[in-house]
Image (cartoon, rainbow over all chains, first blue to last red; front, side, top):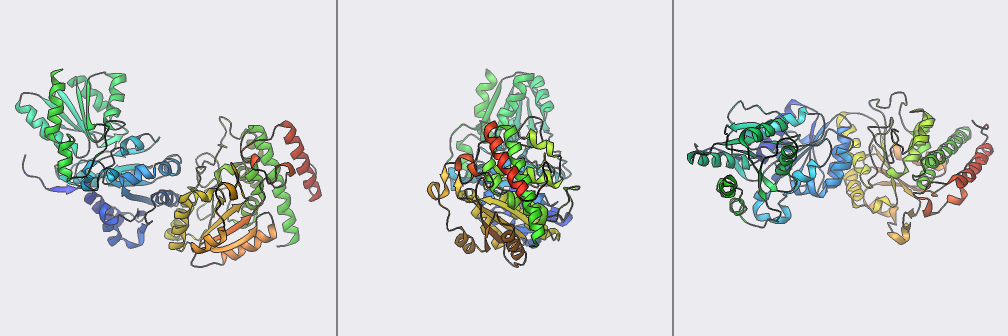
Length: 313
Length: 284
């Protein structure tokens, strides 16, 4: 593949918010003292009268967002995934999820690619936490174009949406004119021997892995599952029926995330072997993001290594 | 406040208290103590203070009320019913399957409930968002939030207080219901938050200490709070938990316990006498 530009999806988030804010006057952005890192500072710069810092108080931020939404405003509450989904879980559950309020949560720094900050800030549990809230939409874009499209789609969706963005720059592989639909997966590569269903930065890795497998005569389908909830069950079941085995790939714990969501569907309707690639129920640690992804098997090479014995079973 | 108006409100508060007992007795669960203690505050807000329309609960620009101490839902529900948001009969289905009256307030279920609450410490944050939202949208309404003196042990309350003062939310009026009791006993023993007035002042609020069971005092304090500019206000309202029913007054045991048939009869008897003494017509 040609060398692609690399952009962190948190950058895309910040840029998309600026655009959205220009188009819609009811967009307001909240941040908890991390606006330079979450990139909501871009919105603050463009629309200072609609940016509100809550200070280092994520629980309060979620409640303030809930209150704002009852006034016809569409708040985007932003902080790191650890504090949005983790620390403020119960506020999100009770003040936003239960009344099904129109609040968008922009969680950056998801997964172990947070890097040097270490395990305390590497949230590998946010999909699991947010998926468990009734009515919550959970999405994790794969690249720049998708991240921007997700922000627009989240605004158009009436109800709470949890969006996970990454700290690390990742290849922007979607071309111009990419259309994203909330709740729909995207088949990036057709294949019949195995289906790799990936989300976030693992989507590009899956594409690379599929290219290698093709050279070995193995036909791997690659599905980009940006929306983890509601899951595109039809696409999952078609992959199960047509490929006979599934590999899920996510920068998240293998517990409670995309992998288990896929298993939940296949187990009931089309039981096939599923290999869950992700963080294997362990905490991360400090290190450069790329090195950590390699160590935890969250690269194309790591995927291939874990897939090979599975494909021979 | 005009004596005649005060007499009307006292009568209304008495009816609200009767309904609180009806509802919790019928439900065989719920929180009568705090509901009775805050009945005068509920009554004052919905019958005197707030700009609302029971015929149009979602009226744009209406004043908002957030019951941050959501467990006193029976007090709110009884007040809403007497104000005309829904039939009084609904109160007898409190906490039952099929009823719109959930154990804790749910804005998606009950007309007149502005925010879903119950998990302590969260409502005040939503109230801050509503006050900020009013400012952003150019609405001139006020936002009221009722918290308990036990509830403010939750750290989130102090995040929200800091936030309200920082953003100069002078359209926000917080009421802290200080009844001195929480589930496990006196707040002074379980976890003492006093001095609440000094803490609120230090957090940037205009503070109004008030007898929360006295309509004259409430009237003066709410009026004074309306005049505050550039900072949020708080009524530190001393109340008696279980107010109006002798055997419930000042007893932590009545925090979350419904009266049995015998206790219900005794409590209703007392409130009926109060009602007559206040000049109410029998069964009025």
